[in-house]
Every structure is written in C-alpha cells, then in structure tokens.
Image (cartoon, rainbow, N blue to C red; front, side):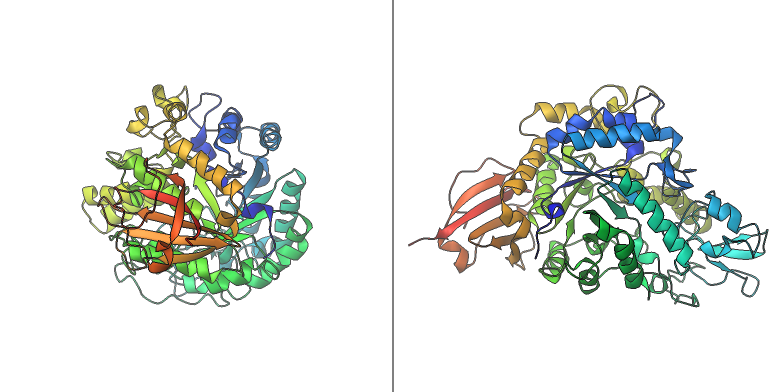
Length: 565
C-alpha cells in the first residue's frame, strides 16, 4: 500500500463546548482551545478533529447547522477560528473539521424556504412525503426516540429527520444539494482545513419508496429502519462524485462515521487506489455490551473473545485493501476506562492498557479529550443534570411512556449516556476543574480534584505521559504503522496478545483485560526468541515473557529479537 501522512498520525478529538472556556460564560469556546494549544503539542498529537463549531440553534449540540460558513456565537468568531488553525499549524498540528451533511438545522435558510410551499425552489432539498392513512409516511424510528417524521402544517406534509425534529434530512438525490455540499467543502478547504470527519455519511442514500421497517421492538410504535437508509443504493456513487469534485484536489485526512459497516464494504470506501475516504469509524466493538436486538441502553456483559473477534475481523479485513481507525470513545460514547477497563482501583493501569490496545493496532489512533487523563463516566443524581437530547428523550420515553423505575433508567444513563463524554475537561483541582470561571453548562465530574491535567503533567508516571510515550513510539517505529496483525492466544478469556510484523521487525503485544493474574503461555514459535521491552504500564524486569504472571490490567509491548542460534 502507498504510504500517506495520516497513516502515521495520531488524532485528538476536541468537543469544543466542553474543552475549555476562554471568556467565563460556562461554555467552552475557540479562545479556550487557543489557550491550550501547547498542551496538545506536549502530548504529541498530529491532528485535531474539531466537533462542529458552525452556526447552530444547538438542538443537538452543534450537529444541527444553520450556517455552514460561520461560527456559533457561543464559540467565538471566524477570526478566532483563524487564530486557532494558525496556532495549530505553527505547532505542526493539522485540523480536521466535522462535515455534517446528512441533515441541516430546520433553521437553515434552505429549510426555511423549503417549508413555505410545495413548489418552493428549495422544497426538493429535503425529503417530504404526504400522510399515509392519516399518519406518518412509514414506521421509521428516529435515533433519538419517537417517529423519524415530523408533520408540517404549512404544506400538510411530513419531512424526514433521522435525528431530532430540528434536523431535517437532506435529499442527496437532488444534484443541487450535492453541489451545495461540495461548494461548502471547498470553502473550508481554502481556509486551510486539512480534512473532514463526515457525520453519519453512510446514511445519505435512502432506498427509493422508503418502505416500512420490520417489527423488531414490539414495545415501540416505531421501528429501526436502518436497512433502508444505511449503506444505501447510491452511497458509493455519491462518495465517488465527492472524491472527483472535491477530495481528489487536496491532500486530506477523511474519516467517515459509518454505523453498521462491514469490512468488505469498508474496503470499497477506503481502498487506497479505488476508494473515496482515508478511513472509517466502524461500530461493531461499540455494540459488544448491548443486548442483541435492543437499544443501546440495554447493556449486557462483554467478553474479551468477542472483542478479539471484532478487532481481528477489521485488522485482517482491511489489510492491504483499506485503512482502519482505532478508537474506544468519542463524544457519542461512554468513557473508555469505565466501559472497557476499571475506573476504580485499577483506573490508571487499565487506562494505560486501553491506550496500548488502540495505539498498537494497525490503523490511525483517535484520542478523545480527557482520555489521556483517564477521565471516567459520571453518575448524576437526577435527570435535571443531564443535557444530551438523546438522554432526555430516552428518560421521558422509558419513565413516562413505558413506566420503568426512574432509578433503573438513571442507571442506564450512568452507563451509556453521551453526557459521560461531555462533562468538562478536567484541567486542574481548582473550582469547576479549571474549565471555566463561570457556571459550567453541564456539571463537572466530582472526581476532578484527583483526576486532572495539572496533576498528570506533574507526574512522570501518569496516563498522560504514557500516551505521550505511545505516540513517540508510533512515530519512531514503522512496524506499528504498517505491520501485519496476527492474534496470539486466541481463546484466552483474559489475555489479548498479538504480533505486528513488517519487513524484518516484529512486535509482541500482551494485554491482560482483567483484575486476575493469568499466566502467559506463549506458542512455540514465540518461545525461541529474545525480547526487548518497548513500553509497559508496570515496572518490569527485562527478559522473556513466556510463563510470566501478569498483574491486573497489565500491558506489555516487546520487540521480538530474531530467533536464538
């Protein structure tokens, strides 16, 4: 495969509302980011992915855009944005912006016009349907609860919104819509942007006719219709057109958010010669702790063997025919250390282990703000402390409509609410974690006095410095970027081990995903070799890892020195 700059890069996601408040109004902003650019440089990341900062009524925290070419007033101005990107570029850090073009805000001028009349010039920018039997055109459920259709009294028709009712879906069948999208992409690229993260990009093509979804949840009036709008019939056509009209003209990192993606389909999208995008975010590993056929709120224990299966399906499935992204959390997911590690006694060790896992696989690693500090989920006492529209809608549906115990529903939110990732970045032990001098828009996690950046920077053995060393290791060792991944100890219930091999170099990665102390029993081909420790999350003696006993959540990375004579 050809080598591209983004393969060797590490990406850091900033959720601007929660990163740093520069003016004391309690809301994170661009000036707050500018004040912490040196922090990002110290960590060593190559790219910042910035979640939406465009003009927005904020029904879904900026993912409902009313003006694609301006900045939300709460976040600052275009001048602030230009100062930020200049500061990043001066530090050798590239900037990836969020591209949200499956839908707009209902306050976008296109939709304001579209709803005026059926013959308006912008009507066909969106997806409208007449009522069916006096109700919605089909039974599709919105991702945020309730129907995916909203009735508009002005014209007596429904419009489709896969997310909130203030996020009407764009009609990508209309070539004028696609031309508008390509124009706004060019506009930002000419401002100096280095790429795009493309929000739910595999939902832009819908099946003609928009048929009813099969009944999967008998307790709900509305059903998940993903088979009719995910990886739709014209998706590849639209992406190839985007590549031809925009992406091919720049040297970019592009990553698509693609639920229900498969490795085979992903290879069509990310193939280095014939694909359209650099990489994708797949979600199979994000579904491991969800009960089959249920919404994400219904958790089940996940198994390491299942994580191994998913990981290797993607590692082998895209080998030499695509590119992986590697992540365990983002603004839509719970905190990784609470979900896949141990956020109590072994928080530090398990956070380092999870970092080792994501950074030693083949694919571009993504760090979500605070992950490098080991920030944890938050357990708010009541629904009044939550801010996320998905969480608020879920609580209302489960408590008011289905009659579930409020404490049980709060427990679901404690585990899976998107607000777990959106509590303010914990900069110090000062008031409000040093995030703001005002009142934060959402409460700070109470554990900020013990978990914060000031403490981490001062401690050479902190999670932050472990991430920094992992990033340095990736930059120094091409085998981490390009090596083939092979699983070792495939059936072990507690240990995930794999090798990375490229040219004459080979690494062995050993990860204990448990509080237990299992024995490492390597296969014969790995016994007859010498080993050099590259990085570990516990102090360890040099020597051979075979028959060694791992400590809780221990992670080790070895350079395999060729077989003994």
